[in-house]
Image (cartoon, rainbow, N blue to C red; front, side, top):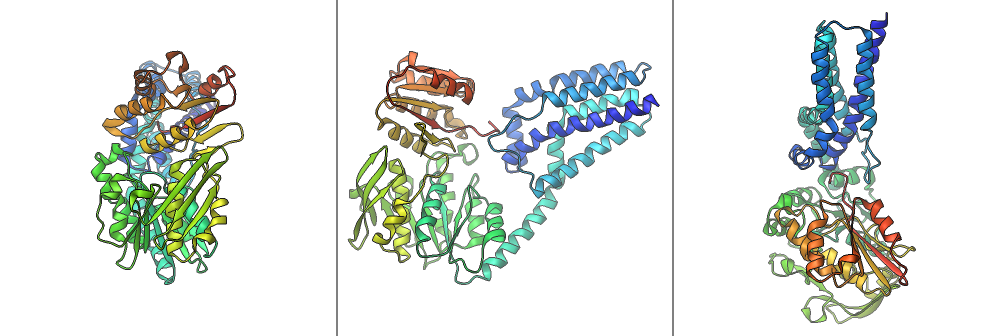
Length: 521
């Protein structure tokens, strides 16, 4: 009787350990878009942490396997149960910045994963050699990262068919709305802010739907269409993200935008794109998809955009009056309260705009939105109130009441510089808190070092987050003459905030939180 109870407890503990371990690895798979190659890259980059997490269980596998060759009883099975439960407890996932979302896909993934786990457990139990093959249970738990990969591979064909059905359903919905105007927005950065600004301005005259938050993949757009698009909508704004060539074209093939905006192009996601030329070509897949009676709106201040010919009708915008662009912002003044500027249209019409938003790049994005809205029949004067009411997108140069500037959503070279320029405009003590930039491939060290040098003259204190991320930023800061006694390296964000709070009182303090590494870094 005791042996039966011990065996039940053993397999229950095994299942609990597998579940707790799988939470972390399935979360990482989700953050890597369920792409096996990205997940494998993440495993390679984090192999030390994975080995530390699983290593002692692998040793336990060897020890238990050797020990259980000898005759044993229920006490050993309970001891193994405790080992499983202890390992699971020690590996309960920490609170994530972007938690695991239990979507239908994740539930299907878990079904396959637990089917595989159950098959392993059944094989051990039915083998009749529990004492010897118990080590297989430990080995399976220790290799959870690969078990999750196997489950995702098995589910691949099924997920492809399900995704195809969802895409076709979204396509039917769009075809049924002949009078719907679709606007696509892409760029290396500025997409989400521009999308939110444009939706707010256009809503003064039209019924607008936009993809929420950062839903900028094909399936994110599909989900928005299927769940939120209604016959009463006049305009659909689709944010279009990309990590690989062809990603933008795939979304465009579905939604068929008549208008498009390319906000900016820069060195971002070089890890997957490899070259800036691939990034440019991918972003301009939006321009290639615009019909001949449509318009592509281009940021004329961005050199990569300015120098590219589209063969389509293009409207340009700029924050430099002498640029020769169609819509220009001039007489820009920025303070803690926000920004003031004048926008001039191609027909000579001009208007003064005021916004609570910070940063020249926000004015640039707003100018692009004003150009689109003006083209769609909303006069400049009709847009003044809408621009005044614009709110900062969460975690994107968001000025908080406590003096922090939250620009933690992500980071790129141009955006980092723009945020530092905003910080430099504040009086009093200026503090930079950042882990630097990621996903920049072979140029990551060099670009972070350059940003360190740029930051040296724009902040009074620098707190670098993460010992692995800090070296290039630190090198750049010191090379540019930044005082070493005002430079700190924190192990994590909580430690960084503690350092900020310990700084001497030198008048009003402004803290720029630039980038916050996602959970898979």
